[in-house]
Length: 230
Image (cartoon, rainbow, N blue to C red; front, top):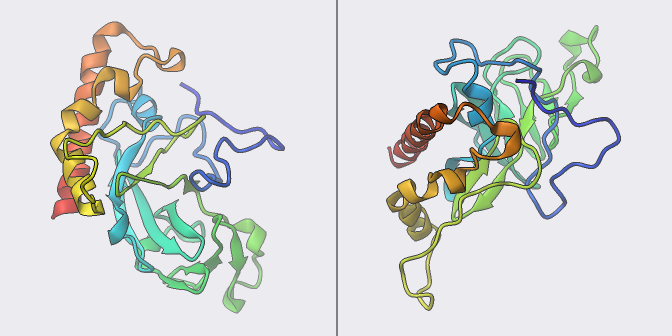
């Protein structure tokens, strides 16, 4: 299954009020190293939106989150939350070991600096033979909803984030922790086939695979929630 590529000059599906626009999309046929998912299942799951952390937990200190076997660096800049592949394009060091300085993510190894959209804005003098244009991060969209940060590894169209209905009275002042707790309680509801969108035309597979894909997705959701609560 080919990964979707946005043609040059076309508008991003994520507007100014939506999640940050992804750049440096994953190449066709990409699978994470040592992927535990079948090659035909990973792209289908990668088109879905997953929660990768509580919004309140995302600070100016990068943290690593693993989604579908792919390591991500999640961090907050003045422009908002950003999600990048946790791999510096220079030598592959994890960016989650780096730091935030002002409006830039700084790699801990050679000090390459990256802007809000993943572009390299400064190369240290020791790498003078390389230019900033040689390096860019693989970025993924970040959407805050229900007190959580959601992302998608193969974004296309508008975010498909499960609607979370509240069982509490609408007049109650719900804080973010309550929203997140309700999501965890309603996890099976969130992962119904209709909510998860496995029946979209471009995602059609053999009907016998649907229950298996749902099970894989539910396991991934549960693992992510367990990590949030650890």
